[in-house]
Length: 420
Image 1: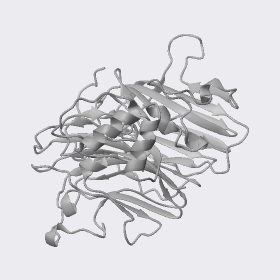
Image 2: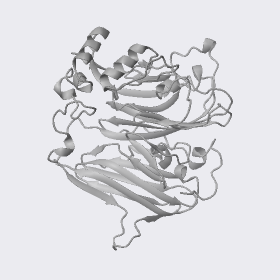
Image 3: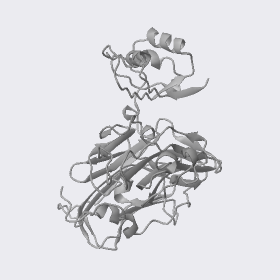
């Protein structure tokens, strides 16, 4: 039996009926002017009539759960649904919990290290098989541009080339070098310059994470904590986590006949890699260099064939699961636009993220994930991005990280000390 992840974006009452039946929710009568509903539930392919009949036969989400084979059934269902099985956190752990942090070894409260200009410091170094589950960082900087100045890198199984290489802010979704508070399934920023990553990062032999201060001033207090699991072995099909930074300041605008762009040759590239793996998502910061709506650029993903995209979307705002433009700032678990300047002015800013945790984009030998910058690449806005994916071997397909001066190019001046 084949399965799919259904995504409804509809104005129809039919859509409202489905959501109400699946979640047991009461939705008011009347047709809304705009509806953007995203449903991430694995469902068997079936007709509309069969789907509605199956949902109606059960008790809300519990009825839907009975449709799925046991490997796909939820372990716990709320909203009056039945509890199925035992959740993983209530089972006997098959690992040893550990943590490496900047705690004060004297027992005092100086739980930080000094990161001088030009210095590199390890925040994690472990041997044997393990799985990083959480990274927490908070700096106390002298400069406002430190989110672009500090570079985070990670190395798996003794590799000399990093599998993570990005400015600190871009890795945590702060692509324009400024703090904004948001929460997602994999990244978050809390008040007090508190940065968290919940990407799972397995390694078989060793793992190492460093931070390098490429800025002109020291960071007097740098706090970090990395939580991980020590295990006997990593499953054979477990892949290595990657994060790659890219930018275009600005993109090069082009004028295609009829704005028809089928090959994506001049698209903005989030990442390009060779091997086998799965794309997990992206964060993207944009600064407009001209007036007008900067969206509509289609996402195009090249899978195992560099000559033509296999997946093509319907517009930049649609890729980030918004619609009719970015109407206002928002942040949800798998997608969001936590920073947005309304009105589309010159100099307008936005930061957005999209994660494919519901259906990571699989590739067997090649991946290039891209997006148009405007319709048919007709805009020359500044893009700053970080792309996240898993791969069967540590990738060596990383372009050279732009120099600090280039990373700051196109951004508004970031001067003065950063407040909490």
